[in-house]
Amino acid sequence: MSVPSQLKYTTSHEWVKSESDGTVTVGITQHAQELLGDMVFVELPKVGRKLNQKEECAVVESVKAAADVYSPLAGEVVAANSELESAPEKINQDPYTAWLFKLKLNNAADLEKLLDAKGYQDALDNEAH
Amino acid sequence: MLKMTPLNQAHRDMNAKMVDFGGWDMPLHYGSQLDEHHKVRRDAGMFDVSHMLVVDIEGSEVRNFLKRLVANNVDKLTLPGKALYTCMLTPQGGIIDDLIIYFLTESWFRLVVNAGTADKDIAWIMQQRDSLAPQLQIKPRRDLAMIAVQGPNARAKVWQVIPGAQAVTENLKQFQSATFENYFIARTGYTGEDGFEIVLPAQDAVDFWKKLHAAGVAPAGLGARDTLRLEAGMNLYGQDMDETTHPLESGLAWTVDLKSERDFIGKQALLNAPNNRQLVGLLLLDKGVLRGHQPVITQHDSAGSTGGEITSGGFSPTLNQSIALARVSSQTAIGETVHVVVRDKQLAAKVVKYPFVRNGQALV
Image 1 (spheres, chains in turn purple, red):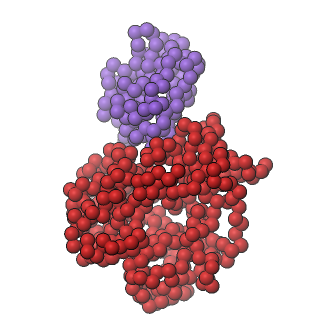
Image 2: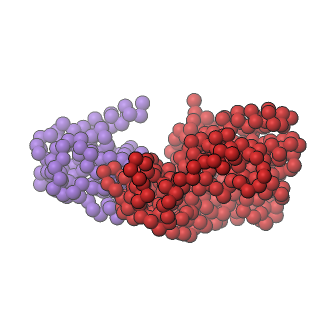
Image 3: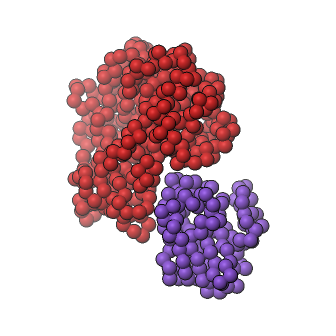
């Protein structure tokens, strides 16, 4: 199971990457895409939308099921990866480059509250038991 | 403890993602459900359907018994080997199960019933047997396995594996079967493609499965089985119909014989049943994916009516668009636009005639 060490994570299987311009990029993890299977539809948040932490803000649908994506932290949507709307399978191919949206955080220090790779791996191990 | 088919280890050896399917440990997919779907539409795939139950009914009264037991008329079965799709109904007209009946001899008919309903089916059939034809023998055949090989190249690949079977099966028409050695081979399926469903001794299943695989038949899981059958417009028991719905509102009027004098269990209830709902196909016009239980709003819904509902929905890999079966007002006409409630949105969908796909070709 692939859990890149430089990213932050949530227990609801989003990954969060801190960018040099102070924004964060959000996607779903390898574990999440494996569970869902072949992706066929993605619904992304509108740019400018203000999100609370853990607010439902996107939907990814596979052949099997629909899954909500939650905002990992509070902030404003500054970009959405509309390329995925016509090619949702990119999430299966590489979930860590197929980002969903970018956020400008209300409080950059919040990032440290998320799980690191080890914490996320532990959460996955617990889920498996 | 989950029940396992004779192929359980073979699935695991092929890296199947296993799921609990009504108490059975079954393969959902072997990597990609979409690839498996396309493989069946374009070439050949194989499904372990050994969780379904073969039930042999033997005795001289078997034909008369089945004429009473099921809604379709087994008198349509005149040639040995011929198959019939039918519902088995409660006295109230609700669907206990849908099944295929094979006519083998005048004293031996073979039923294939769904896995999830198998126990209640057997109990019901035995109860009817006790009152109608106590001398009949009802034999659940858990000693058998069943493998469906489906796709445009499926039959040729089966003949590659069992060359001797070609002579006895190449002239079979749809819904006919023949026996070769230990193989019971029927030209039936649940995908909308050509192919065979093959019943064989459980102990031979792994070897046969591996030989099919070596011949280029791709293993396909329950995920692909569901998208294939939905495209083919075939009902799934427990989703599109159950004991609370009757065949006439489930797109299965063609399987019910109300014309002959024959009296079958549930007939009177069907004659009196309200006919205000029907099963239709939906093609999603907006972006998204239709799923079971989403509400369907039509122009025929009156205030206070419950409206319609999707019974099976999903993404059609062949059409690259979402499709569904939905139970709606019988006033709803083909070509109408309806709206489906998906989360906080109402998505537009067109009412279409189904099947959506047959023999690799889009029909909508």
